Image 1 (cartoon, one colour):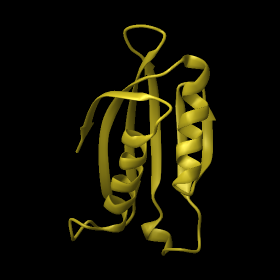
Image 2: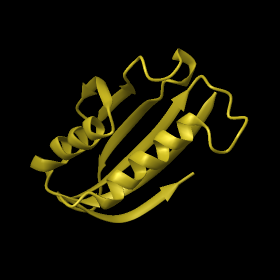
Image 3: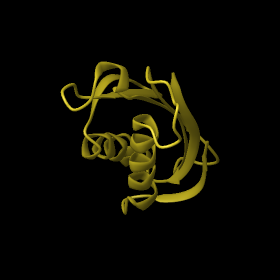
Length: 114
């Protein structure tokens, strides 16, 4: 099983946080399968890769210092064996991480990607 995790600390208003995160997931062609308060889970749509390669990402949202600073913990997983560093799960991880870092509607204050 491939697994990649990390976090982002972003500065954004509470009103915009969830909308922006959902917009980013949709832009990355990930469909929301669970959305409950402090947790959002999304998965790739079927048809482009085999079932074992379908990536699921889960975000945990935690309020940090003030009402405009949030920590987004995330985990990317799929059932593919990560035999190569550049596997499908890692490609989705890289693409979504780049979208998050470069998204103009918030400011990324800190990031850790592993």
